[in-house]
Length: 83
Image (cartoon, rainbow, N blue to C red):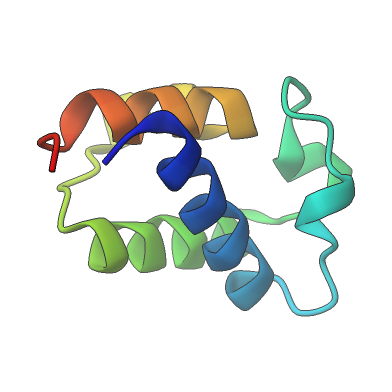
């Protein structure tokens, strides 16, 4: 999966995990947990959904890299095989 595909997927997962979220309006370099006022359970739901959609194991130690759209896209693209 390339970075652009990852970004589209992440925005889709965010929209599913946080009803009413406008992922298209989120700045790519800002912490979306803060922007969307996600609590820890919301973020965990997002992580689980992202893991399910990508097939990636997302260890808690990597969560800091998954707080922005840019960080998520870079992480997913670098951890999935290129198709």
